[in-house]
Length: 141
Image (tube, rainbow, N blue to C red):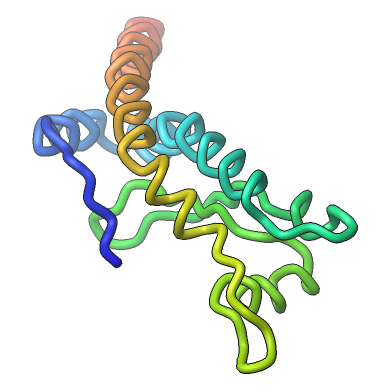
């Protein structure tokens, strides 16, 4: 079941982040722009997650990862804590003894486009802020 999202302005955003260069933290800008969307996903996943004690539900958080290759930044929505990580896939997909209780994929399907919209709204002001910060920083030197 693929996730369908519509993205426009992607190449311009990538060029703007690349133009920041090594002096600015493009990864920091990317992570900051991704966080509001990640919060939306966390809320949706938590609301759909199965809960007996609430421990698993509370363990679902945003985890920041480093970008690889051309990727600037990555944010994961995942359960934290060893027990929660061990049972997450069993709850999501089920076992031969237990029916699936999907909560990650439905949340992503419901909020995917909203996450992209939030990212688009957040990235440009953050790039502009970083450019201003670099201008002030270079003027001081």
